[in-house]
Image 1 (cartoon, rainbow, N blue to C red):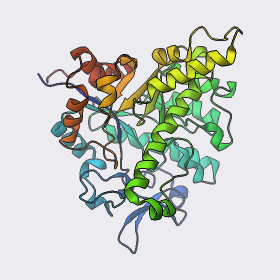
Image 2 (cartoon, rainbow, N blue to C red; image 1 turned 90 degrees about the vertical axis):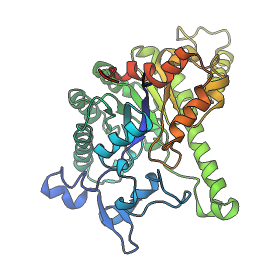
Image 3 (cartoon, one colour; image 1 turned 180 degrees about the vertical axis):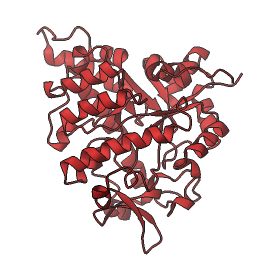
Image 4 (spheres, rainbow, N blue to C red; image 1 turned 60 degrees about the vertical axis):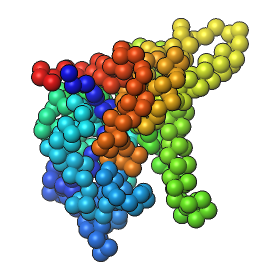
Length: 384
């Protein structure tokens, strides 16, 4: 019998007409669009200024190591941008379903803030969310979309959640660091309407790696001093651990006690950090309160076990050795296709076996299918 696997984090290399084909004529010249540069690269532009190279996050199958990448759409793996090719690729590597995340708009939707016109920001958000449903229509049972959220405008964010709840989206993106954008901290009551809307819509909130501070350590200066491989290693680890900090912030924010039905997913950050972060947050929380009565009924780690999920892909130590320290009902498997760090081709099954080859069958099924299927409402295929 074929093993069922849900890939809880994969990305779209957005086609060039995402916005130009979906906004009113008056907006066409002012939305993100792709041009081929004099150097022969397909690149996203906004108001005439380049801001994103399409191949930088579509390196799956590319022969050269990062930071080299495909220069044009034709150079990218077709499954990175074409839905039918994506489904065929999923069949080839043994994935039944994928949860889909953006590239161009930023992993927390923050790149929409580059737009100066407030109305246009919302137009672009809605157009992108509609594009996702169009793309997923190739097989909506297998292609699971996570809507982008205009978090900078609370009224608009709530309205968009309510609109998208009826269109097939099964989760929403949010930033793990709203204060980085001049907005209230996670625990501020300002956000309560958003949490309530997510709960009412039955949508988990997703804190994807890189959803907050957009500065990067992948700088020319660091590359010159350390080399590209070491710089890539440092920058990646920095991003993984940043999500651990955002989860620690969430656990101490009071959001989870106030909204016990809210589900939150830490995406593309791994799971090996979970035991330390949970122990550290509990220890510091207890030490900080000393003899004072806690305002919460549970410890931060217990709220994690009740409401927070995390995704892993390349790790083999955590799924083999830390199962007693990580809530096994809260782990999702991902591939991160087609990003530089992704599992691609044969490595998908190789990494699964390296991490779960000796795991109990029940745990293996939870990581690969049950946990994500329950979270996103995915049904087993009729024929397999």
